[in-house]
Image (tube, rainbow, N blue to C red; front, side):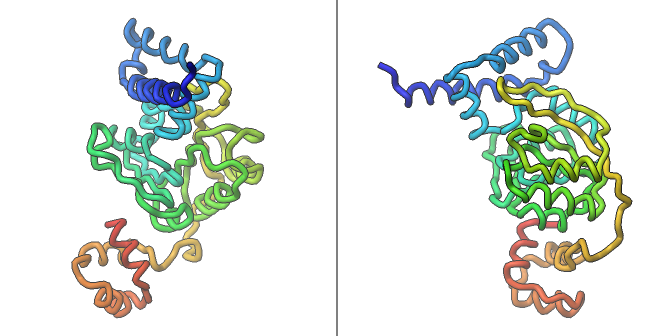
Length: 277
């Protein structure tokens, strides 16, 4: 007798195995073993059927919307090199955790924070609780990473435009294109009008999905207009609160007002304490 619960358990195990095997660094290298592993992964990804959809659904829910393999991770790592990166709407942050484990300078943020369990390679990795617009104000980085932004939701377009206006030089976008299941037409118009595609990064994908990974370079000059950055989130205040986090919020509020002439609320102080220096 067919058991949906049993099928779901099998799909979960298959998704976990795909996640673990695909991140094996041997997959991205030449050689007989690498080719065999990669061939096996491609065979699984190209299957079409109801059970394969269950595997994909389990993978998306538990690990990532884009399929993560060593080739994609290495391609992004090679681009970042000495560049600093902010990831917004990071979800579970498995992509960002893999990049951090490979010594990339990257911060992952999401409106719902998450601390990964103490298992390698994501041990101690934290997706910081911070909405996307606030994260752009908070982190003065060179690259913004946007992966599978929500479909038909204006937030991705707002964040992209704001990030480019505040001086982010590059955008790494992972997801489907216009008329796909990511973002809105406005998002892709902003990409077209305000950036230039500079490189494609190779990636594998599940059957039925047409996502890609592209790096775009901003056409805008970096602005010094302070209206785009929150005075509440500047580096000096952040550093001050970090080094005095043992003080009570009431005292910190008075000191920030005294030294920086900025009025912070309890919510702001708690947020800055959680972010660190």
